[in-house]
Figure: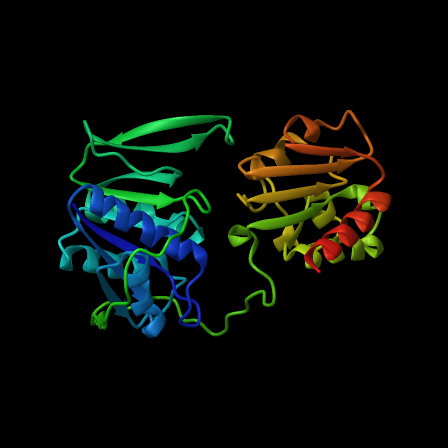
Length: 316
């Protein structure tokens, strides 16, 4: 089975999610006796380093716009046909979600989004994903010749399994984008929430934005990204890009610390795939405790500073 993996470079660098997708493609290719090729924007030593995560070949292209899903679909379809691939792997992020449907039509392919386990080719091509906000696991079979999978973040481990490879540039000048990028602004200085392995989140129990310093202190002590509940973002205490939940950013960190958040079902739907959940709330009846691996029933203004000092002492 010939596998093509599409990953995005940001300033010629790759995030953990890109390595996860390449690992997934390489392992699937190995299990089916096939090959793994990566197609990516830009071109640098970082592209060649994708070989360390299992890529046997890397194709790069100079992108006119990474925000034009129609344009990207055509570029990836060209690469898919160039290498004679039968399966396309992408990250289940905004980019992957925007182009998966277009590519399914172009390639006449079956699609499974948010796959969270390695696909099996025994007795048919089958893959699993979460259903009902993580409350169930569904197994799907793709019967079409061409297949597309988007991989849920932080669902498989990342490991180095090869050596750097030379990358080859492909000419996509015949494909024109209808989108002109004038400026791109990105949140700098912190790990984006979809990629964060450690997250410290807080809700209305903080009583006001002036108290957020203790949340940032805890996050800094453990190297975590900060997040918040929807009411906090809606009232302007925190920026909307920190809002996690069903109507915000869905995350799957290794550790999620929820502070002063009751745990409404909409919030839980976006965080319940976290590997470990710690809840701090003075209300013993808070729904979040039912989903927690560890819980502390106490005043957050008393617990959080002590927890921060304990982490600092441990790390020193």
